[in-house]
Every structure is written in structure tokens, then in C-alpha cells.
Length: 458
Image 1: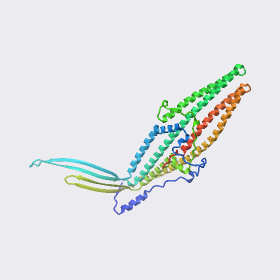
Image 2 (image 1 turned 90 degrees about the vertical axis):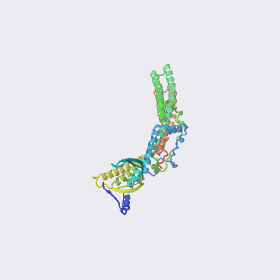
Image 3 (image 1 turned 45 degrees about the vertical axis):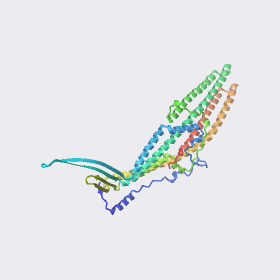
Image 4 (image 1 turned 180 degrees about the horizontal axis):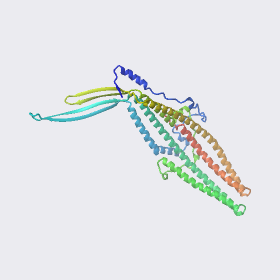
């Protein structure tokens, strides 16, 4: 690799040309159609949710759980360590933009003795202390794009950490809601079991009186056992749900419990988004994709610099304390240019540009997917709200229907098949209403997470 030394007159001109040649590559932009003008499912009063949005559920236990997750979750602890590692790497990259100073100090002592043929033996020696200061500023042009790439990686780590916090907290809230749902279903199951046992007594009385078949009593007994088995299954599922929550706060399931007993005590908060363009700063995955795009842009800049001479600046000075003090000062500047590489630099530049185009497509896919997530979540909330009203009416109608069928069966004017059908309808309607309440709460969380959870990249 040849080395060229610059004269005083040509150095500024050549340096200006090199700086012009290493200007940053233009960052591709999103097509205008990728960002919608508004949200179809949003209300008129638009406001982005804040990070402290969780009190809107009106549950002190939920807030306490979220704080415990933030403080004790083992996965979040690892995320914070990873973020700190990325921060340290960014500090190193920032310092690498500047010349690297060096200092060396040393002391030496020498001894020599001489004895001429016709003379006496004489001692000789010397003591010296050396101090050398230096500075190195090699590969000057590449330092700026390297720092840009390091900055993009750090910002990606910030967004990844924010995404992990939101994902884990949302999962904890969803787990808490599931425990309450299971306890609601246990309460409904106990009600169903008590009702099935009451009907069994009616059927047995009719069988004993000879006005009903023995098979009807057996079939009703199966209904009772099925409800009892369903209760035991729900109790096991509750233990599993508690165990998942306990792991999120770093505790054993036997040391962890949930005091809440029903979803009915929870409020359903409203979540509405502001302008869609703000989502580009509020979704952590979008910020990560944009950071990857900027890192790919820095790679293109580095590939372009391979065609330019490599500029290195060094300087140093030293002081030696001997019998005769000596001071030295020196500085050098060099340009190194690779002439022949069999087209390797050209292929590297093309590969980096192709990666930049791929990162743009990944960025667009992330953005479009994020807007779609919000629209779907908003639509889910609207649908589940109206469906919940219908299901509540279904439960009331099913209870009235079973009451009528039960009375008619007791009087002997209603078939047993109708009684079985009315029981199944009521039990199914109760479970569907509870499932709808959980689905509504989870849909609210989905909107909150789809909007970025109150986080902003800036």
C-alpha cells in the first residue's frame, strides 16, 4: 500500500476533497402512503396514554404487582445489564472520535568499568529518566460514520429495553386478570354445581314417584359430576396462573397470592391515540427498525470511504534527563491508498447498499404493521363492548328460561331433554360473559401496547 506525503500547499485542498467525498449517504424516507392521516377507530378526544396509565383500572393490587415486577423481574434485570453494556460501548465510540493520547515514562541505570593495560581500573555509569508524550489520530475519515453506527446501536438498545419493560408489565397485568377470571369462573361453577344438585333432587323425587325414567336421574347425576370436575380443573388452572405471576416477581408460588376475587371490581379504561405520525416515535419496534436503517447507512459511508486514502496523524514529544538533557518533538501526517483489490471494495459498497435497501423495507413493514395493530385493537374494543351487552342479556334470558323449564319439569309437563338443554345454555352463557370481560380488558392492554405504552424515543 503506497504512502504519499503532502506538501504544505496541496494538503488543505486534498483534505477538503476527501471530506466532501465522505459526506453522509442520504437516508431513505417512508413513502407518504405508509402513514395514515387518522385512526378509523379513534374518538374525537384524542390523547396518547401516559406511562402511569395503569391506575385507570382502579386496582391498588394491580399497581403494587406492576411495581414489584419492575423491581424484581429477572428478565428485566438482564435487560438493564444489556442496556448498560450498550451504554459503555457508546462511551468508547464517542471517545474514539478524538485523538488517542499516550504517555510513557521510564528510568534506566547503566554501569561500566574500564581498565587500560597500563592504568588503574575506573568506574563509569549513567542514570536517566525518560518521559514521552504522544498522540495518534489514525483513520480520521472513518471515525464519524463509526460513531454514527454506534449511536444507532445504542438507540436500538434503548428501544429494545423499553419494549421489554412494556411487554413484561403487560404480561403481568394480563396474568393478574386471568387469575381473577378463573376465580370468577370458580364462583360461577359453584353456582352451576349447586343448581345442578338442586335439579338432581327434583329429578330423583320424580323417579321415586314413578313419573320420570331412572335414566333421567342418571343423566342429571352426570351433569353434577361434570360441574364438580370442572371446578377442580379451574382450581388447578388458578394455581398455574398464580405460578406464572409469582415467577414474574421472582417468588415461589407458595409465597405469592392474589387478594382480588373478581373482574367486576376492575374499571375498563379508555385508550385513544393521537396523530398517527406520532407513532413513529412511540413504538419501540419502529424506533429499533429506524436505528437499524441508520446503522446500515453508516455501513454504506464506511464502504465509500474504502475508495479514499486513509489519513493518519501522529505526533509526540519527549524529555530525557541525563547528563545532557534532551528534548524531542515530532509530528507526521500520512495518506495511504489501496490501488488494486480485484474489485473487493466495489462489491463491498454494493452489498452495503443492498443491506440499506433491505433495512428500509424492514422499516416500512414494521411501520405498516404497527398502524395495523392499532386499528385492529381499536376495532376489537368496539366489538367486544357491544358483544358484552348482548352476552349480559343472554345470561338473564338463560336464567329465566331455566327457571321456566325447571318449573314445568317439576309439574310433569316438560321433557327432561329441555331441562338439560336449558342448563347447558345457562352455564355456557355465564362463561361467555366472563370471557368477554377478560377479552375486553386484554384488548385495552393491546391498544395501550400498540400505542407504545406511553414511551417516546425523544
